[in-house]
Image 1 (cartoon, rainbow, N blue to C red):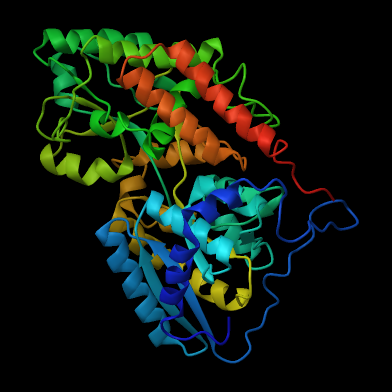
Image 2: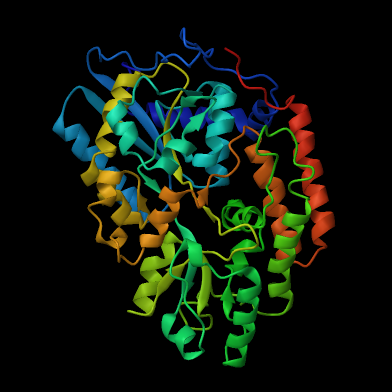
Length: 462
């Protein structure tokens, strides 16, 4: 948008709120993909899109929406916007910060229904496939130079791709594993895994929990109980890896046509039954103060990268990160975080990319990852951080992202329905004790109803 002015972003928000969440629900219920047609060249591969044409006419004013996440992220992005605007005059960026999680997503969907999306949108990565399929985003292949794309972590390239095109880029990715207290484990005679090929098995971890209880740790495992007992995105991010590790999946990974036989298959049932057994046996701290690991009640915590700073400050020199347990088919872990995309509409793609290119510079990527504790999203930035060196304390996270141990959440427009059903199933079965098989059957029914309502979310045809 070349004729945008201060306050436009906030007026968009007000109009989006007026449109209401009901409009968002109607939008999600649509049964045909919107957006640009998929164009192909003579070789049958997707042709470049027209989001960027290599020029900016006049002074371009762009508005971006950002989720109100960690305070460090907000401060850093505000500074980046201010410095970018000061350093050049051709692109002016207005930053609008909005509430995180469900209120943010509802605002995005309502804004899409009323035609009030900004020029640059920040969104949780797994939502990309739904946004792209329904026409809320524009492909950005024509904007991202090959060198920049190659510099992105392979996990970010994978997360940002749908239907053969690139729709989103991120400046950071996530890490998930088991935080452990080496001093406690050594004193109890428990081996400490050295890498992804050396993970504890699920049965081995059960024996370890039993042994740690005998050593005086009544509930030695932190599973983020308070948050996990509520159906939310954390449950899918954190515990889908247990299903994958057991050899199961949340949906048919070959075509995303059904969840039956996958989410309720024997592998998935076994994985969640094992997690449930740890809760039933009392090995999992109820963590009402959300400080089980920090206060030393648990020497093992199933948690993400954002806890490294807090955990290492609480136990200086006595925190290590090891892989999630192997439930039978090899260790697996989560990946994915917030990304940037260009909504459909009149945005000047080249102006938006000018700012995104600035955010993806190594020094800016390092700056953001130091502010939020995440994994730098580019190889050049990773090389500037000692935490990910050969012997760095968070080396495991980058190895998982590079080596394929980290897996994206299902890359299908059905993801909102999948995560809603699975996160509820985890909360109800693992943390509230409902029968695992019946709970997963109900989740499958909900997912398959959504698939049927959208005719299986057909991808665009050449």
